[in-house]
Length: 334
Image 1 (cartoon, one colour):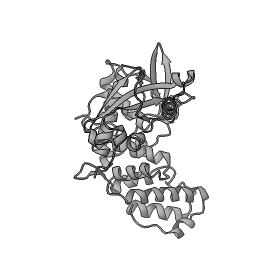
Image 2 (cartoon, helix red, strand yellow; image 1 turned 135 degrees about the horizontal axis):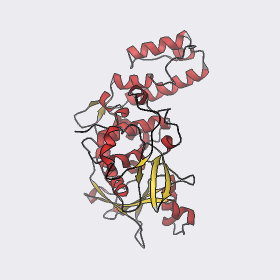
Image 3 (cartoon, one colour; image 1 turned 180 degrees about the vertical axis):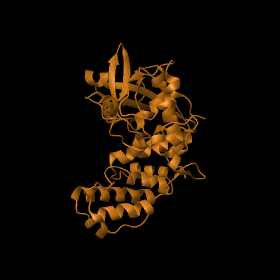
Image 4 (cartoon, one colour; image 1 turned 135 degrees about the vertical axis):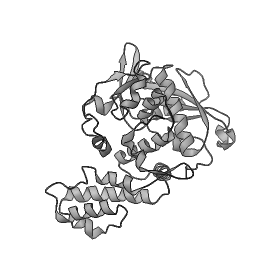
């Protein structure tokens, strides 16, 4: 079986009997390796002592006095944020349960930490997947994409990579693994797709998301795996290119602009040219077991709408697939 996304840290986690990800000390130590928390040469003794003690015992209690004794104000804030997030992690039996609690209750968590949770949970959900198109499409869940029309095709490229920011990795594991800072962008095709596993952590392969193409279809498969893993629910997601006179009983925007488009259609409004041009993907979701749906949507398809923002950046919100579906009971993987 081929491995991928080592930078997610999935190899540092244990698995629960129910298939969820159990938090480990090794995984917590990765956060302590972040540049925001690793004490610089000029750090005070209190900060150095706190960092060293947590490396030895990542779950130990930290008093407010220990934080307030750190001289640098930015360092104090970084520690407060990290320890707050650690408390959220430790309060749940699995990372999946933690993520579901955050998105269902709209808890304030730094976006970078939320993306890291999505990264590692999705890596677990895709265990055993050897379709590079599905894996590349799944990158949309936790990495913004720059959308470009090229020769009639809608191409998604990793925003951070093409902006030249890849020398500032989201995860310290990227640096630890020695992944090159610069990478050339190529569009995935049948000739190069097989090489994805060799460089999956570089995020330097673009994807054709044009309607009906492999990327468009692959994203549907990734969403099916995500829903099945987090909610234990089987769904079929069918991509399509346009919809006319369909009963919009229930819809889910897969990003902020997709939600706005859905709202406009729901209210019978005409889409302007920018909104029409911003649509990246349309999907029809159906449940294997319609009895779990809320009454007013039972038996009807759920339409999923994906769109890019005015700046041509696609910011996928996988949490909307958790909080937006018409389901009576939502359960986490345990």
